[in-house]
Image (cartoon, rainbow, N blue to C red):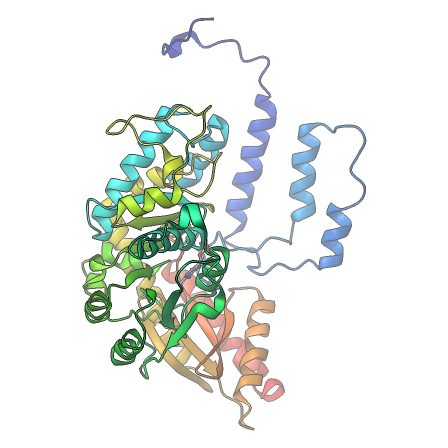
Length: 482
Ligand SMILES: *Cc1c(COP(=O)(O)O)cnc(C)c1O
């Protein structure tokens, strides 16, 4: 049958399970509507979930409608309400409507976004996203990029590029020779780094002992004079990892200064900007990233603050030759794009077959536009500041870190001085109460409650309801929990 672009002549749809798809869309609508009122925390036990979902795999296949209805039933109360506006745990965004809808299309199209030859449209969508993002995030226009599964794999991709380049400068072809007899590689970073960095180092065969912690200043930013000393102590191949947005405090390392020092020692500078890199999109916060464009590689996420569904990380590498040498692959059966022609994603990503994850990203970027993104960053940061200040003003609460950007910390004080214990109990109680959800953390040796606002849906009303619920709970729990 000839292919046609003429949608007036659609084929008969009798064979399509339209009923199933309509029913599933209705389940999705019901779920999204429930977020406004349902408890944020999951309320079903592990045992109950195993009972509901487990049992032997049936010998015979089941009807799709029954499977979908059954999934909705069995997961009820077992999902975290992180898609809604009163979830303030970890660094987790929701899904913009355009991005969610585009994600449905992505599964419908079911393209293999590995090569231009597999799906020309997917390849061009990613190419366009990469260009838009470099411009939005203030990164060099000639940098290469990859759409990966998350910031974890963005680190792996960036550090593989670093490993390639630093060792090539020492006449070592790591792609061919591996690391067993290679010159040593070390990673200098701060104690506040995200643990995904250490795992990236391990996956790359560099080993976690190669990670050396540089002292931090009191406020948690990397101490540049300590970095200078460490760099001076050895001329081993060195990667310096800086943070754009600490997960506890939202603070940024001093990029311009730290990168200048790293440059003097030919170190590769990688930036973990899982959420903080998005500050570049806001005229109000852009200054936090001054100098970040001088780094060698950058990792961030679209599935957090940009509010794209999961499976959306981003890596950018200034040295595109290093990036390509570390990632590209040639196999006899593949059909590669010509140089200067279309872009094959497989040359810039660690995966082979992969989801067309550019589609939801593209939709999110178009749906916000430059001003919408700036507004999202500023609005959510404003909510974080309000939550920290208003919860922090309640009796028996101490602010440990006012919200820099969209992350802040408070803790709950106990009459007997056991603030760590009381803080953990209050966080448990807030989660159990259900109005909103915050997580605990340890910061500077103290237990604290993190306030993290990433979801496009959070409103002033969500903030009011959250503060009221925490206030009520503190009143009610003061004698018992204190
Ligand atoms: C979430 C996060 C990561 C890991 O990102 P994933 O997308 O979960 O792989 C790394 N660094 C920071 C600062 C983060 O917040």
